Image (tube, rainbow, N blue to C red):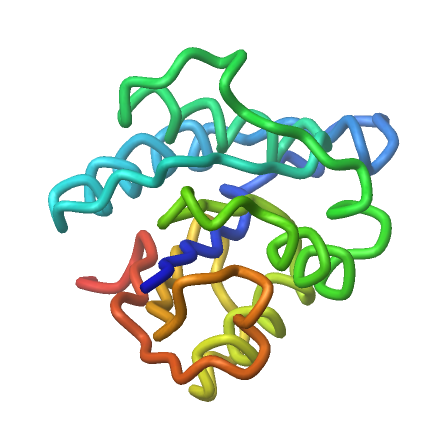
Length: 163
């Protein structure tokens, strides 16, 4: 059985003159990311592998989660293709993960993260809000088989869910 946690980066700051790739989190993003990481941890989940887009807002969100899960920043793997190509690359990348790894958390951007969550969960996820986490459990022992594996949604958490 394999688990993937698909995370959309936390709320970013549009009030700057930076290029999209360098856009940082805003105050709400800095607040939401550790709260959502704690929420996933409280569900008893701790991914074995953290992968992120290297764009500043995704990278910063991933670092907050890594800290809560007790990982050093250096443990996060970055793939520029998550930013450039998105869902298509992410699925290809996931199919190449060692079968020894049972759970992965992937940080990226919309609309790709929402499409990926819908595709892998077979649920109508819709537009994932910023810092949303969708957890999917797949009935397979090999990441190479996730495209055809039976799957189920195990969580869909986001900052304003209980408001």
